[in-house]
Length: 143
Image (cartoon, rainbow, N blue to C red; front, side):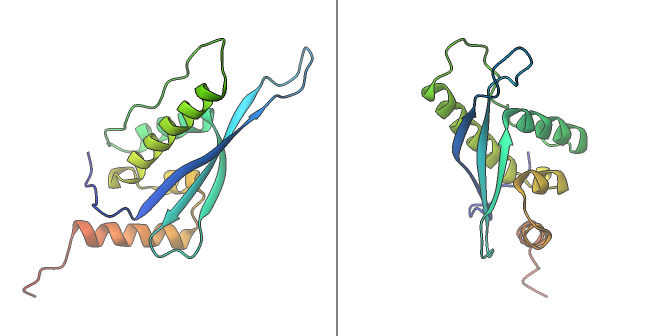
């Protein structure tokens, strides 16, 4: 696993979820949930926001597996349960939030794919990369 900083240079939170019931009928879209992912980076003047579905988290995990050698945390599973109520979705929201924060704290996961998922702009992504490189490779105090 990669180096983890004591100070979080990137903080993510899943602020809310919204259940979309889709259209009724034989060919209607099944219900789905979107999560509001909010990301703050050290030194950024604003927060970055993106709406993501559970399938987006699954796709991110697969892409990171393909791109990196990082030991990825376990993604909360897609539970097959007939009763999906507020408690179910709130629990999943917290689990996904914890999962995502572990990814951003692992420098081995830092890549354009992760930054795109978080909707970071190029300047914020460069700033995070610079901060991590300074943390991982501090200048020698002697010279």
